[in-house]
Image (spheres, rainbow, N blue to C red):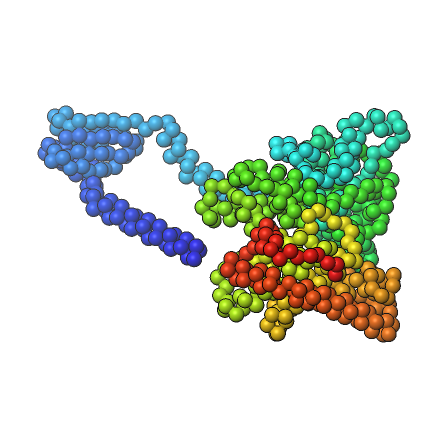
Length: 611
């Protein structure tokens, strides 16, 4: 549609210009053209007194007649007008009655009349040749610059310092030391310490690798060059290696300096894995990087800072000491770090005064810094959509749920029967979680559809957990089975709503047996997952056990699931009034928050048990 509108506007504009041109031409043509007279006619009219004025401009004559009309004529350039008229028989008396005005042609007009007809064609031809040579020169420059890197120097205007980066305490300590080395190399060199050649920033996407690199640029006070590794590689052989040499040469000229290579796994993948072997362009680029980092030329004060979220695919030669001496791991932020990150991203956004970012941080385990920035932005968008002047706690909670599960699907129409099934399903999850002492607390229950989920029960730990015990896993399994058991217990039937719960529970039970050694089969793991990777995912898992052991694994997985189902069923039968109350409240209100849910359970005095 925008393209069609543009074409219509162009057509209307052209049509209007054509109409204006035609009207202008008609107006010019309607004016009466001056009469063209010969010299003999001029002589006759002077003798008869019909001419009052003659203006002479070189050979051109502008004549004004007695009746006010005008005429034009030409005369010889060699002779004057008076001499010409006398030769044509005009008397002196008749000539005295005419006003003669001589207009001399200026020197500029005279020379232009001589030069323009000669020089204009030469100027046009010269301009054409100049354009041709200019294009040829541009092409030659592009050919010469083809092997040059697109290296950029950090702008000092929008500086980011370490204090602007929340969390990542250990990573900042490592990098502060490097910045100190660049600023005060003498105190390190006096002790015999050498400058580290490379620092590899490793972490999941969104953990702040590029952000902390920008902070290094702001803190260092030395030239900070940055480039993406994908910019090295081209389809032409040798271009990547040439650009690598140019990038390192540029950084060495500005030494001491920092060269930051983002997403280094684009060229740093393990050699020998490609179809091209050693002739592969990417591998040649990697070879050049290896030589530049630790080749024969070791007298350099350039630190290479690189970032990747795939350290497992990097070539071992790139990771050895002398090239990347340090590997800085950027973990996902913990509870305190998430709260600090939220405070940073809350700056510049209008929030209500009673906002508790700690509660938001509790609800966002596993969120990266980029996810938390997105959460604050989504909360502001939701508040604007509701025509609010500031975002409140409700908008922050909704933004977190939107990122985890997707937007609410309030327009989805469901029958009363489906709504009742969903309510009892989610009530089963929540009640089982509340009755198990090793389960995480319930933060929210909703039967409003989000994404592909018909409803959801959000249970989250109050603090970050880095280790998980077998009893906690068993509580999780029982909680997953709570929805399935509630449907079976209440309606004596089951629906497809429990399919994802059963899938997740089966996967967890298989992990307990095959990976964590928490089954009756003892402290042993099964299945070798190392090997061929494709697009970051495993193509297959090597089966390093017999068919008899495979049968035992299946039996243990089945035992875990059956036991979890029985625990959930036992809790629901013992707390049937509580289950009914939770489900009926959900049907009425559709959503229950943490405080509402536990206030609802107080009259029933539920005793917690172990799974």
